Every structure is written in structure tokens, then in C-alpha cells.
Length: 532
Ligand SMILES: [Zn+2]
Picture 1: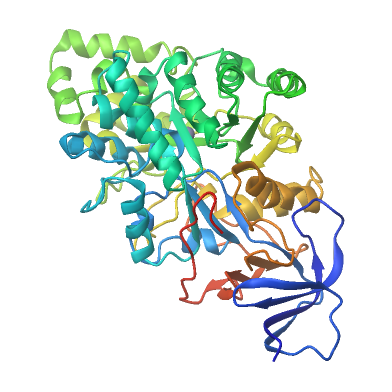
Picture 2: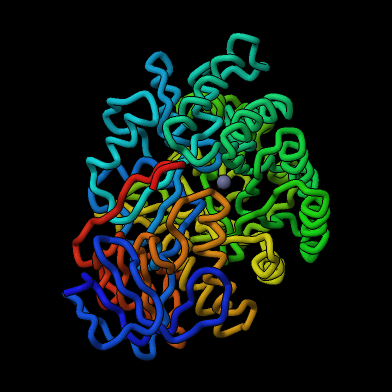
């Protein structure tokens, strides 16, 4: 036998954006060894007749929050069944390393925004975390970014002040060694404590460290009502000042007063790119966001945690002050639309609020919607998650079809036993939704362009070696699907639903999804920048 795997008669979409063509693909020892018309003399241990199916490089999800869940066994069935063969963690300023033991409690609180605290931490740096991920045998490959929030806690706790000289030196050393050990870049989360305390000059200083390693700076921008373009300009300025490649995370227009102005945002990216600043963005294909309710309440109320907030809110004047501030809108003044704020997750045992909008809950409780938010926070703290239907499909589509966009889910590789949660459907549907709804049904993108935004382009962008393309010498991360059948099925009402139309998924040459279902095999590798 010449090969381990031979896929015959596939419609090959190879990740370059070139037109699909009929081809055979041969794999040996986890690596693609031949692509083209292979003669009948060639044999393989396994042969697959892919007539009528498309074969693409496994998708690379550049924007995930799977940092903690990947430490458990068999996380990410929801991702592998979408064809995601590489999961990139460490986004929005949150990563599970480096951990400073003296700030362990703050690190725990910080990572809890992602859904749960850290498990028993036996590491401090990326090498240690990487070993823990490898020991958990991930289903798909894992590539890591390091979070500015985590770095900042390690040197300064949750201190809001500018870093002093010694702290600045230390934070650069920590970032430098994470990059040395193989992370692909660093990220900020400029609406979250403590990343939000980072000034333009602090972030530029760190981006210069990333630039020295030719690594990426990815940013979850500041949340400022009606000033989305200021946030883009800040990201561009950091790219210009540091020389780092900039990835603007989950680009969207959340303020109804900005709806319809996608082209104005895009022209900022175009102008920066024309003058030589390397800045690009990612997008997820939905018109709703999702995150912790706490993010939309006054920081002075939530900063001390739910117990402290309950104490504060017992005082009538303080409660009035909170209600009055909330009533002015979120992110500094985006007007509330109570029928567009949907409770998605709280805690096990709460059967009342998940699935209801704030408008509906307020009617049941007979109270003002701002009061409803306070009562939810008092009862469930940071764990309460809301979906916000504050975007338009038209804006999202304009971002998605722009040449500088790639696709990232902002989802999480779900723990195998967490299927009772009700996440944003992006966790289950992002990649099939692009290929079904936006390529086939609406004709927003060609199949070849869409696949490029989900494989080759992310690999180029983040310098993930030997992934993202179907070419000889590249790792055999492959997804086979029916271009006429692929679709997402997860909805806000019923999110834990796998997509349809995906046949097989291979990770490093091993079959992990068969007939759309995970077969129990874990074949992922921990990837390091410069390795491979
Ligand atoms: Zn984010």
C-alpha cells in the first residue's frame, strides 16, 4: 500500500481561493503527499469515493474562548462536527497563562468571564499550559494566543493605574517568553477589567514585542456608543506605531444609530491597508452578540462581585443611582430595546428566565426592565448570559464579503457533559452557516472565497505553518461536505444542534467525524508558532 488514505474524485477547494477542480488526495503518516489525478495503480489502506462531495482544508477558528474547556477530555464535539480542525484560544485579553501564584484569585475571577474558573493549575507559563492541553488529548489542533488581561494581572493585579517602569519591563518579558515558547500573538479585551486599563502607549509597547517576533496583535476593541470608528482607529494606530500585524476581533455595529454604516468602517481598514498598515478583521455570521449581563451594568456596581453588589443595592439611594445609570443605555449610551435582550443561560435550576426577553420577564415580574436587570444580577451574578439582537444582517454581510475579513466563531469547544447549556448558536453553526446560508442560499461569497476565509487566510494571517491548504507536505486536516446540503441547524431557541451536510472530518490524517458524528477519536496536536 502506498498511502494510508486516498480520497478519490473530490471537488477540491484547496484554500487558495482558486476555482474548485476534480482531484484525488493521498495521505501518508498524517501528511498530504499527493494531490491531482492519481493512477489506479496507487493503493491505500482506506479509500474514499468522494464523488459529488467537496473537500476543503479543515477550518481554522481564529476566535475562540476554549482556553479552559480544552483542559477537559473530549471538548469540542460542537466544533469538530462543523469541520473545525484547529481551535485558536487566548482571545479578548483572556488566556489561561501566564499565572502568577500571588494573583491566583484574580486570575480565577478573570477567566470566569469565559464560563468557569481555572481547574487545578499546575503551570505558570505557556509550556506548562501546553502540556496540560496535550495531556487532555484534544480532538482538534490547538493554537494559542496570550491575553493582555492575564499578562496585566500577572504583573499588576487589577490595578487601574498605568504600569510603572518595572511592571512595564516585566510584562514585556512575560509576553516575550510566551512568544518564544510558541504562542501566535497577543490579544486585548478593552471592555474588560483589567485589559481596559491599558493605554494606547502600553498596548503599542506590547505590540512592538509581538512585531519583533513577527506575531499578531488581535483586539476586542473598546465599547463606545456611537464611536465604533474610534475603536478601529485605535487598532490601526497601534499597528502603525508597532509594526505588528493587527487582527480586529468580531467586527460589528451594535449601536442602532450606526446601522447601515458598515462601508464607513470598512473604508478605515481600506485606507490603512493602502498605506501599508497590515490590519484585518474577523466576523461571525449572526446578527446577535452574546456575553455576560454584568458587562452592561455600571462598573462601580459589578467590580466587587455579586455579593458586594447585593450589599450595595440594599441601600435605596444606591439602587436608584444604578437604575438611573442603566436607563441611560449600555456601552455609554446605546439605547435599550428590551425585546432584543434575551436571557440565554443562568444557573442550573433557574427554569424561569432562560429563553425569555427582558421585556417578557418584566411583564411576568411586574417591574421596570432596568429593575429586572438588577434582580437578575443579584440572583445570578456574572454567570447570567444574554444574547443581544443589536446588529443587522446587512452590516454583517458587508463585513463578511470584504477581502480583509476572515471567519471566527467567538464560540467555545464545549465540554462533552455541558450539552444542557444554551449557548449562542455560533458555538454549533458558524462555519456551516457561512457555507450554507451565505454561499449557497444568498450568494454573498463564492464557495472558494468562503473556504479561503476559513482556512488558508487564517493560516497565513497567524503564520500557522503547513496548515490551511490542501497541498503536498501540508498536514492532512480535511473536511468533506456536500456543498448543496451543508447547513447550520442551531437556533437561539434550540442551540445544541449539530450541522448537517458534513460527511467526514480528518485531523492529522485520522478520521474523527464520520457521517456527521464524532467517532470518539482525538487526534489534535498542540501547535507552536515556528514549529511544524
Ligand atoms: Zn471579544
